[in-house]
Image: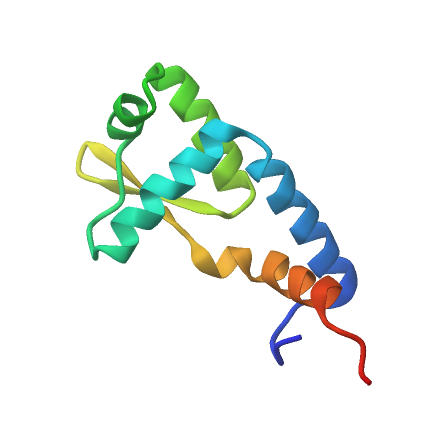
Length: 108
């Protein structure tokens, strides 16, 4: 576990919240699009851009973005008349810590 990792109770609750938010293919696809933008040093995406990419209504894209924002996976920032959504990779650390914990090999 990293030195500034959350206590185990908070880490476990955060991991559960993140897993619940990820348990939907549309939300996974949103994360994939936002991750691609981030990896290419591009700004995040608006609800409209994500809705078009997903082939869903703005209402449905907004619903999924709200769930991802509540879990801390996505941040939404107002820029003029648009809201830009970006991936917050730091919020995924509790899940990473938990996955590392459960996949560690026992000491020989």
